[in-house]
Image (tube, rainbow, N blue to C red; front, side):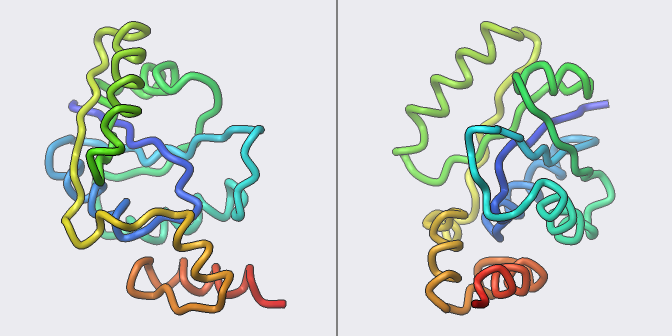
Length: 159
């Protein structure tokens, strides 16, 4: 079985993330969309909320599961039997940081490869921070995120 982990905060998941999930699901037998839990970060959505939103968004994929982890990503990948870590690259500015992470992960777990996937160009400007900001300012984000995510954002920012 070719197993991959697609890690991220996914606060919230966007169509750009889902484009990467779709590409990964075509390559691997199982793809775990893995929510990284970092106590230093203060996400808008709880882990449980993000799991629910992601699970709802990936229902059309037979080989995609949702997981969560804390600590080292490579340990999480090992625990799932993953051979690869999926990372999305939107722009050249992402590459330097992602390249450094990939090299460190290779040093820590040489048998787990990092696979870089690019989303469709219509998603290259999307990121969760921008989506949160737009929603907080009352903008409709339904063209950037699944309907359930847009609804959840609207509820979070209602005063």
